[in-house]
Image (tube, rainbow, N blue to C red; front, side):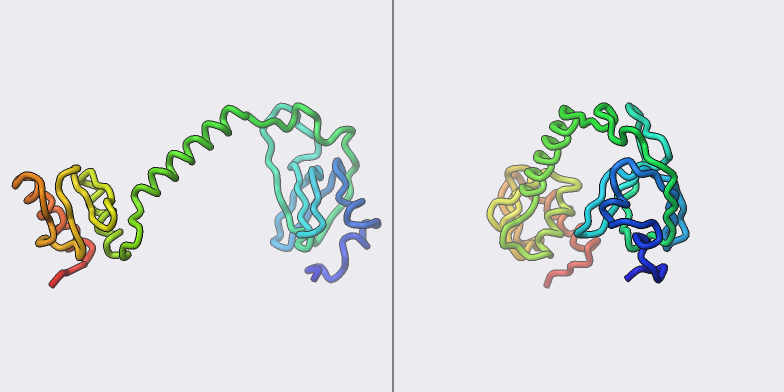
Length: 189
């Protein structure tokens, strides 16, 4: 459905692919009322999306504002011309070292998140684990929460389900557990 009531292709002439050829410069008006000038960088006919570089001159080597627009939402399109070479070789580059660093960070974060997720535990157990992890070093050991590598909290994760460790460590875990259960409004019987 065309919001303007007429196909933009019919107004400008030519097929969508010809109209949205790389390098065409347009003044664009959207159904939202937004207006901008942009150079067509890409067009995908299946989802009917156009990618514009904002402005009417390519800016090689500079950062760009781009817009990805559903062509169905374009209510006005005025052809302003065509650039000589819309996508210069140096205008689009990717910092591979930066991408690799981001990927490595994402992998480390995913691994850390996986270690923090209990397998086969209730949402309540996970909430208790997350709350305890804010003040104490914790890890899952099957369905038990291992605190400070010495104190074990077993299901149903109440104060009387705390075992092991020194008396001081055991009492500390019980106290933090009670406070966190109260804060989470998880009251045991």
